[in-house]
Amino acid sequence: MVLMALVNVEKKNHILLIGLNRPEKMNAMNREMYHQIAAAYYQLEHDPELRVGLMYAEGDHFTSGLQLDDWAGVFANGKGIEPGEGELDPFHITGEALSKPVVFAAQGICFTCGVEMMLNTDVRVAAKGTRFAQLEVKRGIFACGGATIRLQREIGWGNAQRYLLTGDEWTADQAYQWGLIQELVEPGEQFDVALEIAEKIAKAAPLGVQGSLKSSKIAVSEGQEAAKQRLFPDLQPVMASEDVKEGIQSFLERREAVFKGK
Image (spheres, rainbow, N blue to C red):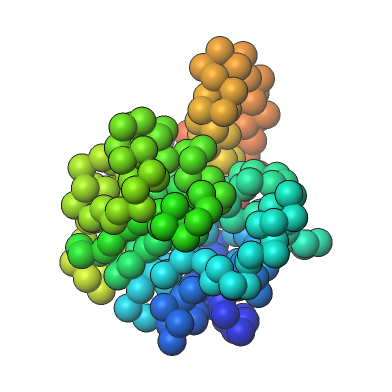
C-alpha cells in the first residue's frame, strides 16, 4: 500500500484501491487531497497491470465536500482546477478521460465534490442512510466539478435542478430509485460489495471492458451516430487479440477464461 498523507492507494491484483483518508475532517477535500487523487487516477490509467479502480473513503463519511477556504483563489482564476504533471483529473473537467472503469463506494455524507467524483465513475454503491447534496448555491458559488454537466443526464432535468438550485440534500433511497447508484447496501458493506463488483470487472477481458466503456462514453459525449461510426473500427483490433482466442477456447473447454489484456 502506498500511504499518502490524505489518500491511501493500494494495488490489489488488477484493482487500484483509492481511499480518501482524512476522516478527522470528514474527508473534506483540500488541494493536496485533490492532487493525490489525481495522481492515483494517472496511475490507474497508465499502469498496464491495472484494469479497474475502486474509490472509497475511510471513516464514517465519504466527504463533507471541498475545503472552500483552500480553493477560493483557484475558483477565481478563470481557468478552474488543473491537474499537474503525472496527474489525471478525477472530475474529468480538464485533460484526458480515464479509459478504465471505476467503482465507487459511499457512506455517511457525500457532498459536492463527492457527488461530482461519483458522476465520473461507472458503477456506484452506497450504504443505506448516505446523504448527498450539491451545497454550492448556499456558499455563494455554483457546482464546478461536473454536476451541472452530468447530473441531469443521470437523474433527469427536473430532479437535477431541484437539488442544484436549492442545495437541498437527497437520500440514498432516492439515488437508488433514480439509478444514480446501482447497489444500496447495509452500512459497513459498501466497500465489500464494491470490491466484489470490481473483481468481476477485473476478471473480464480488459480490451472488451475498455471497448465497452469507450463506446458508451462516445455515445454520451458525441451522440449515437458517432458511436455507430466508431463501433466496428474500434472492435477490429479487439477481435485480433489473444484474449478473443482465450474467450472462445475457454468456452469450448467449459472453464473460466484467463485474460491477459493482449
